[in-house]
Structures are given as structure tokens and as C-alpha cells.
Image (cartoon, rainbow, N blue to C red; front, side):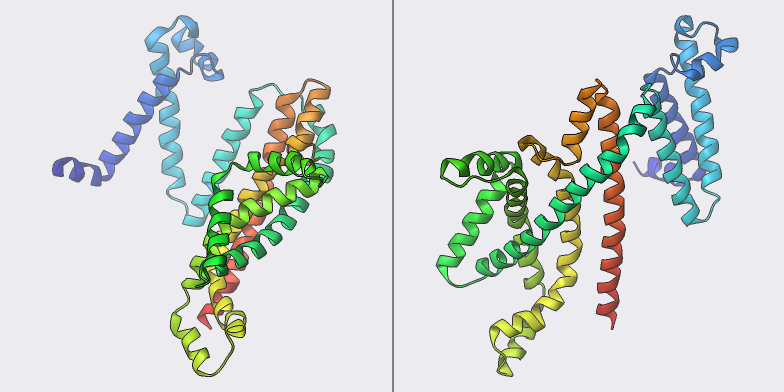
Length: 320
């Protein structure tokens, strides 16, 4: 084992090992039926009949290109390396979708509607839901930390119940179950309620951990000065806890953005619902699903950048 570790620490050995693994992988994938097989036709003959030799030739060419690409990228500065990797993976991703022979004219006609109607509804539902979920999470976290057994019992039951049920089940229970009790509710409010109570249960633990992450001496010092507990929590504890609460809350919002697609089952005109219905109208399901996926990804990137700016803001505040 020690000799193997020493071998891998040497740069030529690492390159040889990477090339060997790449060669085996691309031989297993069998690239003879791709455009590469057609390009190598003069060397390997008919790709389908070239057998193991053709598979090896295709794998060898791809491995050589991959090694050259690694050598070039590694010579770049770090930030350019990251950019190059992103661009190359994005191109591979788009090439994968291009191989499906999609109708881009149909995508061009529908993408504006998906964004202006579907994406806007998705963001609208998600932002309202995360605001309500944050309030629920705060009260649930405070109740769970309370010495009052009644409040503690309600909080723990709520967190256990809504974390234990699938979100789809909660949507059905709220949309179908509440009318059975005499409360008729529209699809959009039902979706917002379901997302809020579900994510409020998860975020309650985030808020509790953030509040408990503030040193107890802060609250004790405030009590010694005669500051009331409510004012201590609002003015002293919560502002310090926010730098622990904000990063995971941002992750929860991005997760909620994608989970909001589940409210399409009750007829909410959000992104996934429109992608399904628009694709069904002309039997272009794959075009719409791929387009919706890329819109979700773009929205996630935007909110990731916003989250990074907010985290940087709290980091600067902590340094001051």
C-alpha cells in the first residue's frame, strides 16, 4: 500500500493511471456508433464490424484528446481553469441534448411563455412560501427550546409530522382534505401552505441550531443588565444567529424552488405544469421538459449568486 501511494504521488504515474482509467471507460462505452466512429472509418473500416480494434481506437483517440485538454487547462490560472471546466461541461451537456434531434423552432415559440408565466409563478410561490416558512420555523424553534412542556410538545409533534410525510402527500392532504372539513381552498394557496409548513419544519432545526450557536453569555449579560428576554432575543441573539441561519436557509430556498414543481399536481400554472401541458399539445414532451430543466437551473444559479452576496455581507459584518 505504501509503495502504491508513493507511485501515485509522482506526476507521470498519476497521468498514466488517469489515462488507463479513461481508456477502459471509453472502451466500455463503445463510441463506434458515434460521429467519432465515422471519422475513424478510414482507419478502422466499417465501425459496426471493427470489433475490439474499433472500440480501442475510438477510446484511444478520446483519451488522447482528454489528456491534451487536461494539460492545457492545468497551465491556466485557477480562475480560468474553473471557467474552462464550466464551459467544457456545459458544451458536453448541450451536445448531449443536441443528439436528441429536438425541435428548436417549437422551443423558441414556447420558451417566452414558460418564463413569463411558469417561471414567474414558480418564483412567486417560492418567495411567499419561504417567508411564511421562516416565520413558522422561528416560532417552532423557540417553542422547542422553551421549558414549557405544552409548547415543546406542539413544536416537536409539528416538526416530526411534517418532516415525516412526503411533500406530495402534504399537498394532497391540504388540497383534498381541507374541503372535506368545509374549507375550500384554491390550488395556489394550497401549494403555498404545503410548501410553508413542510419547509418550516425542516428550517425549525436550522433556526434552533443558529440560536443555540450564539454563546449563552450574551443572553446572561443582557439579563444582568435587566433587559427583557423578548428584547434580548430580538436585539442581541437573533442578529448574531443570522450568520449561522442564512446560509442553510438559502439552500432551503433553492430546494423549495425545485420542489415547487410538485404543486403542479393540483393544477397550479407553474413551470413544470406548463412544460407538461405545452409539450402535450404537439407531442413535444422532451423539448419542453429539457427547456424547463434549463430554466430551473438558471433560476438556481441566480439565487446561488444572491445567496453568496448575502453570506458575504454577513461575513463582513462579523469581521467588523
